[in-house]
Every structure is written in C-alpha cells, then in structure tokens.
Length: 250
Length: 252
Image (cartoon, rainbow over all chains, first blue to last red):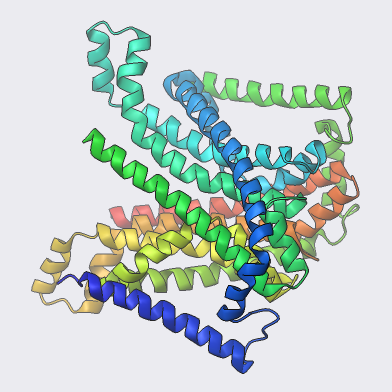
C-alpha cells in the first residue's frame, strides 16, 4: 500500500515544524550558544538586514556562474563530440580526461588566483574548469554509446558526415547533454562560490565568508538559506525543462 | 600493436605538455609558471623534510580527518538511506528533501560550519562528512529501488525472515550500486576535507599549501600539490580495489 499525498505532506510539515521548534527552543533556553547557532526567529529577522547586500552578492555570483556555465557547456559538449567520435583521440585522451575529472580542482586554485588576480576572472575560469569536466566525461560516453546500428544504417543510405552528426548523433546524445547540463550547473556555481570565498572581493561567497569572519551568525544563516534556495530553484527548473523535453521526445 | 601505439601517443602528449610547460615557464615569469625542472628538486627537498619538516604530521592529520569524516558519512548515509528506502512514507516525505539539498553547492555551508566548529579539524571533518553523506545515502536509495520485488516475494514465500531477506537477497542485489556510492562518497569526502583545509586551517596539507603559496614559494607549492594528489590517487585506488572485490563476490 502506498502512502497517500496528505500523509506525505503532513509528515514533511510536521517534521520541518518540529525541527524549527526544537531549534528555537534550544536557542532561547540557551542550550546552544546563540552566537554560533542563532534561533530561527533571529535568522528570519536578519533577512531584513542582510537582504540587500546578499542579493547584490547573489546577483554578482549568478552572473559569473552564467558565463562560466555557457563556457563549460559549449566547451564540454564540443570537446566531448570531438573526442567521443574519433576513436583514436578517445583511446589516447580518455585516461587524461578521467584523471583531470577526478582531481580536486581546489589544488590549482591558489595558482589560478596568483595568475589572474582577485577580480571576477579567476571565478569564471575556475567555475568553467569545474563545470566542464563532468559534462565532457558524460558527452564522450554518450557519443561512444550511440547505437552503432543507427550509424551503419545512416551510412548505408549515403548520409554525409554532416548529416550523420546532425540527424543521428546529436539527437541521440540529447539526454546525455541534458544530464551533463544538470550536473554542470551545480559544479559551476560551486566553483564560483569557492573562488569568492578563497579570494573574492565581491559575490555571495565573499559575503558568506565575511559574515562568518565577523561572527554574524543570524545574517550568515539567512544568506546561506538565500543562496541554497536560489540553487534549488535553478536545479529544479532545469529538471522541469528536462522532463518536458523527454516527454516531447516521446 | 594498436595498444602499443596508443600508449606511445599518450606518453608523447605527456612529454609535449611537460616540454611546453618548461618552455613557457622559462620564457615567462618562473615564479608564476614553475618549470618542471624546478619542481623535481622542490619535491626532493619536500620528501627529505628539508623545506617542510612537519609534512608527515600534516599528512597524518589530513588522513585522520578524511578517515573520521568518511566513517561518519558511511554510518549516517547507510542509516538514512535504508530508513528512507525501506519505509515508503519516510521515503516519499524525505527523499525529495534529500535530493533538493543535494542540489545545493555544499560549499555554501562551509562558513557556517567554520563558525560553529572553529578553524581546527572539526570543521573539515564536518564538511567532508557532508559531502560524502549524500552520494552514499542516495546510492542506498537507488540500490533498494533496483532490488526486484519478485526476489523478495520468493524469499518470503520460502519462509525467509526479514533479516535473512535483507542479508541474503537485498544486500547482494544492490551491492554494486551501494559500493559505487561508497566510492563516490570517499572521493567527495577527500575533496571536502581538502577544500576545507584550503579555505581556512591552521594545520594539515591545505595549511601547508596555503603557506607555500602565500610566500610565493611556488615550486614548494607545486610539490605539496603533487603529494596531495598522490593521497587522492591512493584513496581512489583503495576504493576501486574494494569495488572489484565486491564485483567478484556478487558474480560468484
């Protein structure tokens, strides 16, 4: 027997309410130090104070993320198509791509900052690198796994290489590309935020870091909630687009 | 023949990259682009404990943070995953919340963790735990969904009790997905601890890297990065060994 929708929604509401209630009680009763764990009511009140600078920081971060994301998707899909469709290139380069994908990119961050300074450039570059590899790895795999029969039939019917790409390979890898785009956005946003925390003068990462350094916990929690909500909205939005597209594809 | 040619081409690419790096570094500022020829002696000085005598202690601290964070992530990830996977109501109520939280770039929580746990190991452990927890919990959920209900029904029909069904039917059927999640979890825990250390710490590999980079000791910085990369590769090799073992066990 499957639980009904009211039961699910009820449980969600009750548990979130209970969590907030327990947290509020704990903070008011002094069981936790409000300097580090502010009460939900204090966090809600802090939205007013931190709203404007946090929104400005968020806008700054999202602008950098958007640029990094476009670069990562274009680069990842383009390189993925190239490497994935040429067998020799794929065989030779795959271990390098996998190794670079698996490396914690944070290790090169100090060098990137040293090279590019403290402006928006290192954030965009690092965000691009961060988002590019998951997309690249997925697209290489997607192109490799395109149904050989489709390609053979298309060739047998005299398709030119251009037609082969446009009519067979590209439609076949659309789901992979979308899966990559879904993964890539979180990676790009993460990359941009990390740079802003590490060496930012603007942006949400810098705002969060500054609030933490200033021990302004309510404002910090409010700003964290804001950026979390923004990223959830973005990812769920991409998911919705994805679902529409897959229904359209049938 | 073909395999040999591919290996040769790979070596050629690696050699060309190193040569280009060396040439670029000599032409441009060697402070920013450390040539490979300068990295080798720096790595030698690092490994003989000349440049950073506290390398073993820092490496040990980072490994310890990873181990503790990963242990906690496994415990919480398995518990949470099985609770949500085996109970329909819990799964439908909290599964979407888990997935939504996974969509948040985890680094936004790091400043709060640093405020709460301080600059020492605890905040790195908390962040590594947070990154490792999600893939493990989600892998358990996905794995449980993969278990064919027919297998469970048949086992029950033959009189198997719930614990027996769990150990003999469910775990083997989902083992592959589970182990994959554990491997991803380890990789992300390692990344989390390293990111945490680089974003702010007083000890550990990240602190050494920040020190070298802050003083423009770029060759030492590259050497320290190479040692950290070796740590990452070693942890992944260990995980892939376990994965292969589990694969063999499911097949037999």
